[in-house]
Length: 338
Image (cartoon, rainbow, N blue to C red):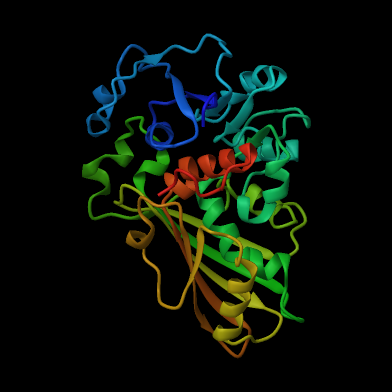
């Protein structure tokens, strides 16, 4: 279109795995222009120095508070966005933060799960498009969900947000496996090839930081939960992927076909949620922005098993962030996404 100027994008924290995924997506996006890439320890290097397959010669710069772009993505370690986002918001920028800094409404939960004090005002709309599309569309600054949280919430939301008859949710026992990239790019001995090859282990059992945002998005909290919830996160020798198994207990028995049809109806207008007839796998969603959900089993006692899979770097981070940007800018939410 003649005279049309594409909105410009900067990424702060662009050298990590989520930042690199964002870089690739924004470079390929037809309606925005990537302007600046900021990284702290990697400043002065090019994208191709760290990620040769991109062929991108843009140089990572030190962030000095500049505000020349229209849109800012922040892909920083938890705690670092708290000092940056307010200035960007005050300048009228469109902001999508990928950390947990602005997700939780309850400061006490934030302190308990993130180990940091924050003000009750340091909250932004929780940007899970399938549940909060209208809030995202009306916002200039949003908080992108966590990767585990995305798969778990999407696997439970139809049963919580729109319960079937008298089949309320009583109990959830969740086991979710993440690829190693979910821990970030920094070298850690316990995540090395020698430690993880042929290995799998649980961690942060009962205290994972995504737990309160899961409960918050489902309309409850960890202090006075509306249903029982236990969460066992695990790490496996995968580069990318989240594989979530939800063992649930309902108030009454529902047939698999009944639950599956309810999920299909709930996600009818959600372009990135696929309710599958057959078992989903990580490879079905790798390098895509899809969340695949499969209702695997139900029993006469009201128990059922739901399996969800996402790519933790795409639907669990960068892809969902671009999906949110599209909604905020009034674009088709699928634009520029694999």
